[in-house]
Image 1 (cartoon, rainbow over the protein chains, first blue to last red):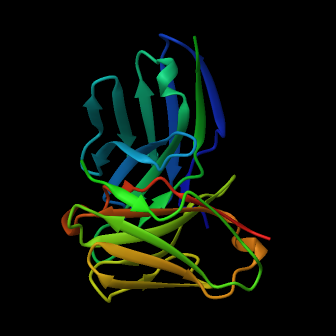
Image 2 (image 1 turned 180 degrees about the vertical axis):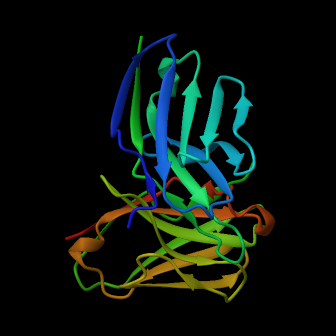
Length: 113
Length: 113
């Protein structure tokens, strides 16, 4: 059973426009939600996180929104740049003695110049 | 900056061989993780460790074992490699109190022929 879902395998946007990546989850016990970014031939890098008690977190061009009632989060990138082209993974963490992250399958973002 | 290194970027092994993948982190992190990444499946947790000599199974531990004799080093062992273990293997580490924020190595592309 997939607890973290990214339903769009790919997204293409124009440079300067907004990119919106979406993620849905099923487990209400998740404490944190995160976005990781991955370039080809590199490991994923942490991008931004949000606690389950918040509904928005912003870091520069990146903003994550959490809608707990809909079990949905989104990552907004404004303005998008060609260097943002990468695979973005949504992940969730339930804390306690369970140390693991549950990842979505990823969304390939392509930002066209 | 946290640095997580993996012993090989590319590895080719034959079916039935015993394979060792090594991971070293330099930030004194308590937690270490092994994932595999496959197209369309995202990142899946194989094993993790929260202390020296401690290990916990992840979602897909079958066919794998791990070893953590020193805090900075976490090894993944394929006892008898099979073709379905051809994959990208990613190691990660994190602080005990921030298990949700993981730092990844560059990955090892393993091909089993």
